[in-house]
Image 1 (cartoon, rainbow, N blue to C red):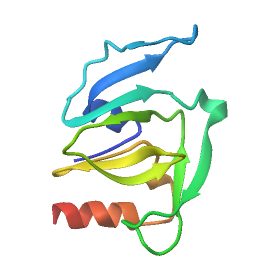
Image 2 (cartoon, helix red, strand yellow):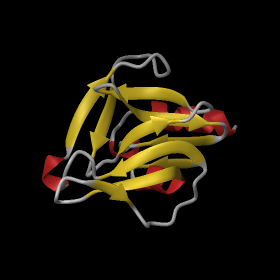
Image 3 (tube, one colour):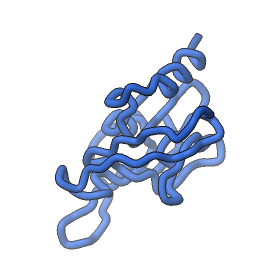
Image 4 (cartoon, rainbow, N blue to C red):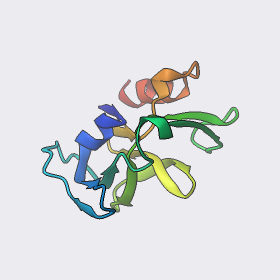
Length: 124
């Protein structure tokens, strides 16, 4: 299973949300709880704060990976059985646990097929 952005939130074991007063509180949103991560919704800000970054990662050789963040969550905790595949500014943005893959960015919005190829190889 591959979950991107909101899909990563659904896969996460713990979900929190940023409240306007600046407090982070538990989110009552039901999820699947399949990947041992804690994730915070809309962590980079609202729609106007969306951005594109490029990061090198050894899992995806061939140049920087384009990361499209749209009201993206941040992975705040990674459990012991979770492998970090990509990071942005010190935070995991793509993780894998067994046959589950979660990304806080949108690989489907780029012309780069590496994330999707990785997923197909993973399930193949």
